[in-house]
Amino acid sequence: MTNIEDFVSFMIEEGFYRYKPPKGLSIMFDGFTGWSYLEYAKTRNLIIGQKKDGTPKYLDLNTIDMNRKDFPIITKLIYDTNQSFGKINNEPVFNTAKLLNVNSQIKGTDNDQNVSIFWNHLDYLCGDVSQEIKEWVKDWLCDIFQDPNNKKGTSLVFIGSQGCGKSIFFDNLMSALLGEYFHYNDGRDYGERFNLELKDKLLINFDEGFATKSKATEAKLKSFITQSKFKIQSKGRDSITIFNPARAVFTTNSRYAINTANDDRRFAIFRTAKKDFITPEYFDCFMEAINNKEMLEKFIFELQTRKITSRLNIPPMTEEKKSQKVFSADKVSEWFEFIINTPRNYTSSLNNNIQSGFNNNGYLWNHYEENERSMFKDNGLKSFLEYRGKNDDIDTTNKLFSALKVYLEDHKEWRITSETQRIKAKNQFILNKDHLHQRMWIFTKSPPTEAA
Image (cartoon, rainbow, N blue to C red; front, side, top):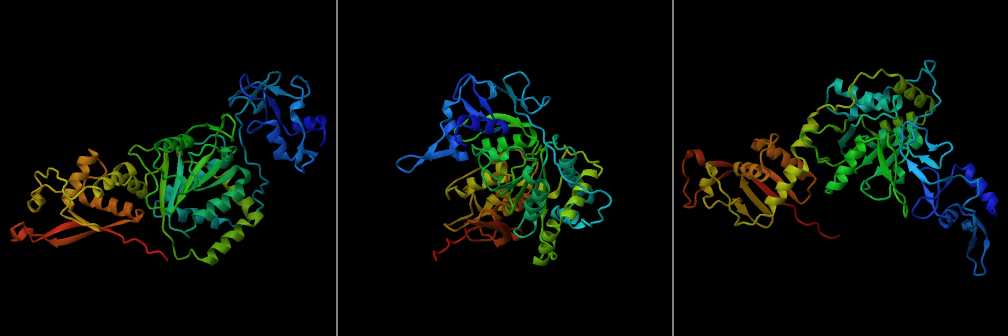
C-alpha cells in the first residue's frame, strides 16, 4: 500500500470513517477506536520505504483531502439502542450502541453428548445452598445466551481457595463458548482509565478485581453491573458511550471479598469449599470436555433452550452473602483499624458493664503490648456499636467475634482468639466466685517474616 488512493479504499473496506468533530483533531474511527493519521500508520505498519538514516518512512495520511466524497465523514456521535450500529444513512452521524449476539453452529437433539460435567461443576461452585438457588444460577447463565442484550443488573461472586475450580469454569469453559464476547480481567483495578478491552463483551470475569478501598471505583463498578451503557476510552482519545450488555462474575481467593450493603440488590454470593473429587484427574477430564467441539455445541444448545423461570433481577440470599454483609469493609474493618491503633491510655465510658470492674479507669484495652492486646469481649461489642452506630447485623459478641475472625484471615498481620482468663481486681483479690474467669479476646501480631 504505497499511495493515498489504496489507503482510502482499504480504510473504507475496514469500516472506518473520518471523524471530524466540531472541536478537536480529525481521526480515523470505526465505532470504537480512533487513530490519528500517524498513529494509525504506525499501528498498521503502512511503511512505504526508509529514510536516509534507516528509520521507516510512513505514508503521509495528512494529504487525504478533507472534502473528498468517497471517504465517509462523520461529525457527531450518538447513543441510540433503537437504531442500528454504525453510520446513520444520509447523515454525518455515527451510532455507537451495538447489540450483540452469540453466533454458534448448534446441533440440536441429534447431539447425544452428555454434558452433565458442566452443570454439575456449576452446582459444586455454588457450595452449600439449596437446589432452588442453584437453579437460579443456571438460569442466570442461560440468560446470557437467550437474551444477550438485556442484562438483569445482577452478578455472581464465587469465593474459594486456589484449586477449587473457579477459573476452569469461567476462564476456560465460558471463554470457549463466548469467544470474543468473553473477557478475563486478571486482577486489574476496574477504575483504570483506558478500558477498550471491555467493549463488545457479554461476560466479564473479574478475578480478584473487586475488593477496593476506592469508593469511586466501587461505585463505577456497581454502575457497570446495572447500567446498559458505559464509557470507553483509548489512550490519547476522548471517551465515547457504547452499549454495555456485559454480565459480571467475580472469582476470588479472598475470604473478605465484597463490600455488601444491607439493601444490596446486585450480588449473589457463594462460598466454594474444595471437595475430594477435585483432583488433577478431574481437571484433565474437564479440559477434555472443553476441547470436545460436540460437547460444547450440546452445552450451548442446552443453555439456549433451557426454560428460565427465575427472577434474575433479584439475587438470592445465601449464608455467604449474610456473612459478607456482617463483615463488610464499612463495618468491621474500619472499627478494627480504629481499635488496633488505639493507645494503651485511651479511655471510654463503660457504664453498666460488669467487666469495667476490672478496668475501672475506662481503658479500652485490658492488656496492651507491641505484639499482643486483649480486651473484654463485652467492651469490644460496646466499642463497636458506639463507633459504628446502630447495626442490625452485628448485635452480639459472637457475631462480632466471627466477623473479626473472618476479616483477619485476610489481614495477615493480626489474629484473634477467644480465651477464658482468671481476672483479678487491682488489689489482687478475686471479687467473688462469679468473677473467677472472664472471656477475653486476644489480638496477636504475627512476627515479621525473616528475609531469606
